Length: 333
Image 1: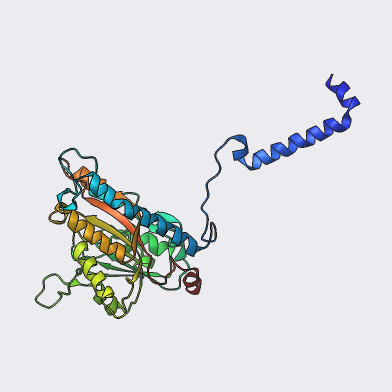
Image 2 (image 1 turned 30 degrees about the vertical axis):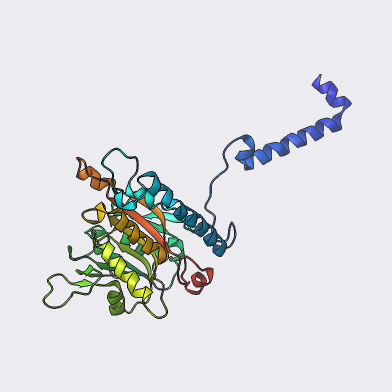
């Protein structure tokens, strides 16, 4: 019967065959036409509008989240002074619900360093890989340096400056690799909101501004801070310093990886914590990633509040690679 139809209408049969072949080829090249989900791929900075327009869009989204913060305060008490950061009476919230990482990094976000405790989420590391001279500060090393080592490996133009008065060097990830150690610099000092490093001070503490002046730096590409609760005063004084200049200056770094220790006195006062967080926002810091420190909770079991969390911020003030294609292109090797 098929042969009979072919002999009677050969042109129709040939056209039908060609059509089926075209449909097959199109389906093979695009799984979505066959009902499969589309392939996901990372789009570079030139897609979905300009870098400037993407930053404007995600800033609008972030401001919309800020505008809803009073709703959460009203829901759990109405008066922020009466709200516990970590409730003990069965309420379904924590401090971290008030600080959502609702800003979107306009570049690739990657986990840098170990997959466990010590690794950090970084925005746009690919933009530093070809930079002739980049600067990374790591404050709070604690003997684990997979994060810093990974940055040095990926970005050969970077130098890493480490500070931690509790240890004497970077971890083995840097110390045992000669090529990485050559681009690292370590001091057993601490970061603080005040300079206290006289001969009478057993622990030498420096402000970030002082450290940068000592190193001859005006800008830090990546700043990592993990200083066991001292971050509140250190960042407050840093913001106060740059906002008091004439004219006020943006914070001197492109992004910040920060572990927040909302415990002791700070962990009991939501009003105080929110004011501190709002100072970060006013200074141009936008959180694009967070993760709770579950390792800490696992070690110290038994009613321990989830009061440690890692945050990654992008600084939306100033002129740097994460905000400007012109800045990115001008600093390539």
